[in-house]
Image (cartoon, rainbow, N blue to C red; front, top):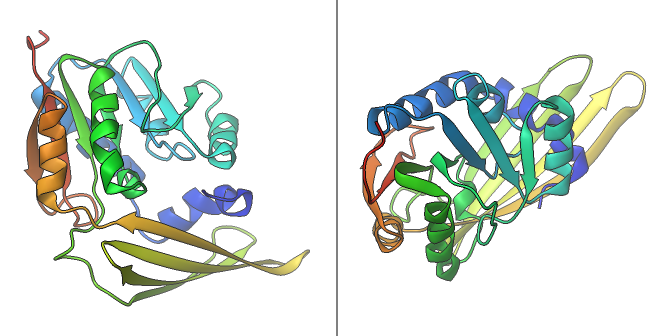
Length: 241
């Protein structure tokens, strides 16, 4: 679970590290409309602080978000007061309505146990209209993960300087990323905090099987979204005009 210190700098850190939220959002919207030409509604699951959602708001008539972290959701609500945001767990939320598209980006889907992935995909499918599409960005597969990966950045988003240092290792069928942050500004000096994330190294076949078991026709596009690729699943039923 993300802490409040990180939630406040989340978008700044990833944007300055090269994450292109506008381009990624436009790419995902394009994938959706290739399969659902009349798509007008989208649900962004694990929307975080709204980095993608802020752009979906201008691309769809109805764009909503679901987020489990209270800290991230608080930042999203402050930055996107016009957005409809829901507190919920991707594994079992129930909003009582359906959308043309449900998306789960930035490998958020990998923050769960393998036994839970099937239920998550079924939850996504329940929130889709017939002919709608799910878009899921995975974490690395077991064969594409780099054990012991180290990344380091010094970022200057405004009056602050942020240093980020991460080390990612394999732990069985999962990876663990330990990240150290030092945030410094002229008035308050430097403060240090850490974040740790566990991502499951789900194999491609598991994503495809759980999509299929949820009543979705799976498709995988290699190389997109930071090189990890993206899964799509179209819900069975009549296509929307």
